[in-house]
Length: 186
Image (tube, rainbow, N blue to C red; front, side):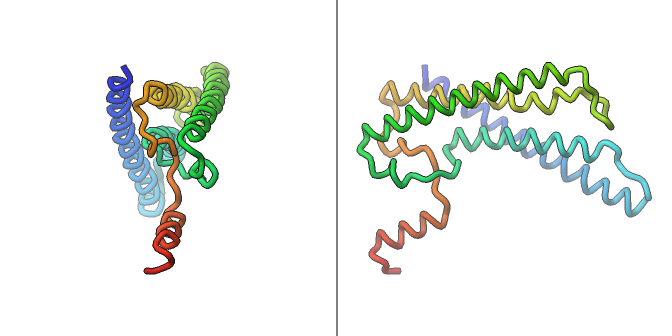
């Protein structure tokens, strides 16, 4: 079951990457078009700022989902990296349970904000402000699924020992580790 779920999540994340790229393209067109209209024709695109802001919010949440799926968030594995595999597994379970609790709180709060803002109209577009808060609900739902699939892989033995550290170090830390690992020789 987790293999099929992993494939589904991979497909969803590819779709999210496309959506992020499309949102960035729309933001560039809106903002650049607005600048050209203001300076060249003394007018502007009224909805440019509002829609660009909303796309930025959605892009941030969707990008965080893709990074979560790819285990690309920056983290510090100084202590966990020194633990034996059983300790790493325990830390992975603990961190995922904590993240699931946070995601649940985000979903609850985001849904409440969607309901509160359902009838509130945005100043320039007139669209519902619930659109902005829906990003946190979508994020929470998909992030919860990603975290549960990771836990499922762990408990079914499909997670290799080298995958137990689900963070990525900064490039500087990786270079320093490489230098220190080679005895300081370059």
